[in-house]
Picture 1: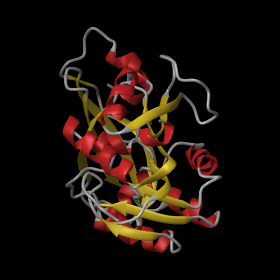
Picture 2: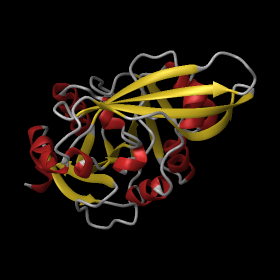
Picture 3: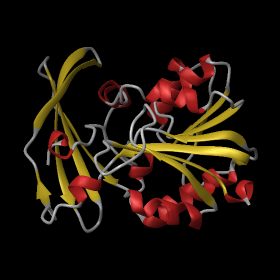
Length: 263
């Protein structure tokens, strides 16, 4: 199940536990073209922003450069160390996005780059969304994106399928160049994809392999899911240019607001 076959990005969310070196992870998973500009536009009228799954600070850095008050939260200490270097104007918090309390609210809460897909149980997803809701000001916005799974999920076959490894990119990190291969295992019934990345260094040191599990969300689940967490879906886009979402969209980009703000 190659990413090209199913039109999903070749990036997967950061796993909860891995031997994946943070510097190598950050070099491989660098975002989708256009996503930073989209999030800058989404935060143009905001003063304060909370990013869940801040990683190495790629999005947060751009928002802080726009003069916003930015807090970035992540449970991966190695990535937070990179963020401290990459985004010095961002306040960083080491915490789990399923269970945190910062004691304040924000104009925007962002979960970029498939971050919600790293939550492997429905209850984990709801816990995260409830925490996001609790940290939004009245009238604030929750904005998140992931790849659209609609087309490949609709296939009749696929449970337990696995594709062949393919070279997805070559990166420089940790003092050498790495050829990065990806293949995926898919469980349709569980909406589960395990993306396996194998990084082969060109200097002869051992390869690094990491399996990154993810559970994707379908568009027709979103409205009820958000409502159960005290949020109303405002709009669903299918591209960074804010085109309306449809079944051919490559991306699933959602904007929601606290239910009380629209009562």
